[in-house]
Structure formats: structure tokens, C-alpha cells
Image (cartoon, rainbow, N blue to C red; front, side, top):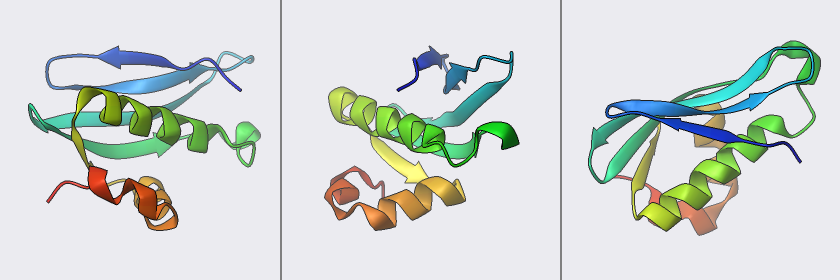
Length: 95
């Protein structure tokens, strides 16, 4: 389990994990409106892929969306795939 920092601004932000070698894994988002975020990018450095890091980032975003009462547009292909694998997240999909 990695420590995930949420960096949030007026128009969007990112979830970031600062990795041991100085690199970062991140999932970025922007705001469509006050009730909807668009997750547009997820990136894990090659040396860290296959370790569940991207999944941790998505799970944190899902938990925050539930807590904050916002919907998600999964523009990022990885996040869209995770939504298909988790039908219990359907209520978070923005129209």
C-alpha cells in the first residue's frame, strides 16, 4: 500500500504517489462542473507497473468521489476499464 496525496485545485488536480526512486505515479482529473470530475490520465513509471499502483490511485479516486458526492467521467482508458470491471461503481458514472 502506498501513500497517496491528493493535489486539488479550482479546475482539477491529481492523485500522486511519490515513489522511492524520485519518480511519481499519478492519476489526473479536471472538473466538468461542481458535481463532476473527468479522470483523463493515469501514469505509472515502467519500473513500477504490475504492482497495483494504478489500481490504488483509482480506488482512492472512487472513495473520494463517493465521499464528496461527485460523479466521474472516465476518459482515461485504464479508468474506463476499471469501471467495466466494477459494476458496483455504476452509480458514480456521469451522464
